[in-house]
Image (cartoon, rainbow, N blue to C red; front, side, top):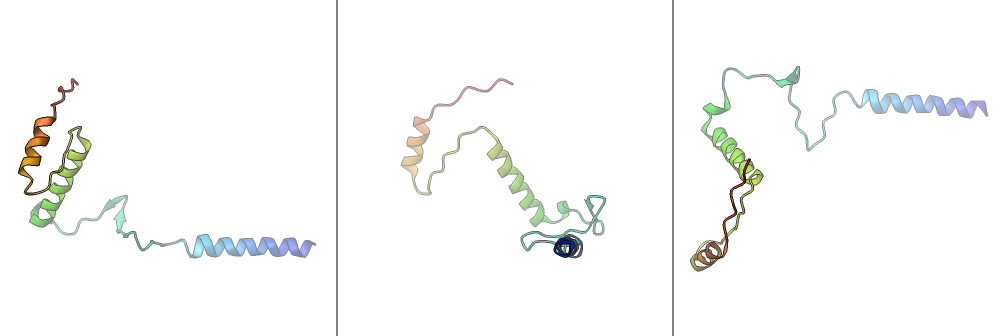
Length: 102
């Protein structure tokens, strides 16, 4: 009976070492991207910034603008293109909300 218990303990220790020490050093899932960091901040590559690249700055601006629209309390109604009459009807039926006092 003691040899079974001893075998289970040795097996658990072996499993633990393989699972958490050997396989857990530098594991990144496929849906994650690894970034080399130094004290929690990404290392700067040269003196380049995102503001110098027009494509990146435009994309960041669009993301921030979309986040601000989503976070706002405005009602957004999507109207398809070439729906002039529908747009006028929707605009005429909506009543403006009173401005929120902060």
